[in-house]
Image (cartoon, rainbow, N blue to C red):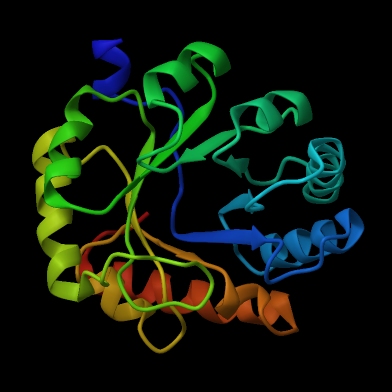
Length: 233
């Protein structure tokens, strides 16, 4: 397990991480699949299915399968929180919060090839990354957001930089670290300049159509900011 924690088996491209949140987008699997495919066509590099308070697990699995079919394996598809749904739907992995299943338990259930991501909210949580079998981390919330109830105040760009520093001390530069919450076309470049490897977005990508153009615009801003920082991919 220690070797796994020091270097992920799968490289994860966090540049534009789209969250298909059923609270923002349609619950219909075909519609979610179309939105995911449009995002990928515009340059989205990773997708996550997020549904809070799942009342019908079977319907959620069907939605996940529809999304998988629509994106055709072009980018990985992860599931928020639910390891069981990821297994049932054949998703590529999960994204976990600090109160979800422990990453080591998720790794044991999903196997070595699955992608496992983790939300990190504090420097102390970043310090723990050295011993966790995760493939990436997302720091947040960076800014205020209406997409999720968050009792913790936003960390801002300064807090993001401090937590990024601690995360890279813990795991080295090889662990991709992104940022989440309240990120849009107006501030994405600032988030990258602060040190993030990418951004996780919901409303600014899927909140309004056309999704493909939203993704293309965001991806252009992100790539330009990474190049300006000297972090070429």
